[in-house]
Amino acid sequence: MITTVGIQGIKGSFHHIVSQQYFESCVEAIPFLSFDDTVDSLLNKKTNAAIMAIENSIAGSIISNYALIDNNNLHIVGEHYLDIQHNLMALPNQTIKDIKEVYSHPMALLQCKVFFKNHPHIKLIEDKDTAEVAERIQKKQLKGVAAIASKLAAQIFELNILAQSIQTIKENETRFVIVKRSNSTILENQINKASIKFELDHKRGSLATILNVMSDCKLNLTKIQSLPKIETPWQYAFFVDVTFENYKDFQKAKAVMTIMATHFKILGQYKNAKN
Image (tube, rainbow, N blue to C red; front, side, top):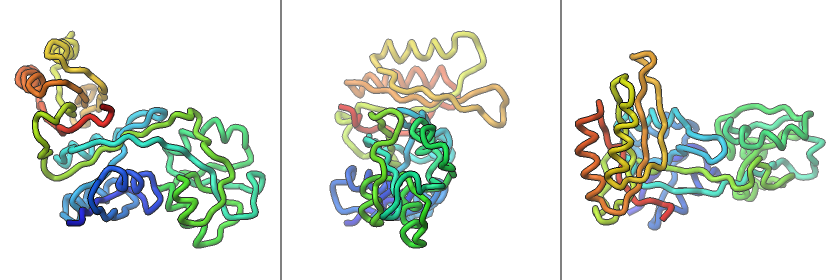
């Protein structure tokens, strides 16, 4: 059976690359130009799963995607880390001096900030998707315009790479999560990572107390992200990732945290991709 997967971006995008690497069986990647549309495709059952970038080692968390997963009650069933190498590309027979404008996703522009400081003649313009810009340059034969995208995008859309690995920090990794409408079906003895969300009373030491519970139950905190509660100013929801060796340790911690925290919620239970 072919799995249909919603991705933000077109063929040649980093989400497309993840779809090819993560799924072992046949997969059909369905492109969308926004994460909202990607999630809608999953909710409307046009796709079986969706891939969403959630954090980058340089630029940090993609806050809006945490909210999309939570607000739509989606379940994280897996994760994938991808080495992100940004390349500057344009139509053939041009040099960097010929480039006047670069269009790319804001995260890509942020990750390449230092490179463009050395080329102040280039105007940086935010766009929806890295690979889609590469496709547009080829279709419209846009000279003086460059894209920041993967080597795969350069190959697909027949563009010349003017500069390779232009990201500020050469070891640049993005974490992607695979989300579905229902929770993970993998065996408990294979689950060693979980994503949870909770809220806490605005009291001194409330966060420290719940972090101590995690530590006492042998959970390793790998990520904590706070998001403001729009309806309640100056109060926050916490999104936390934990790893563990024994699923029973997580169950024990979950039982305590459910009592201590407000609106405790499991966003996903899955295999740790870093193992």
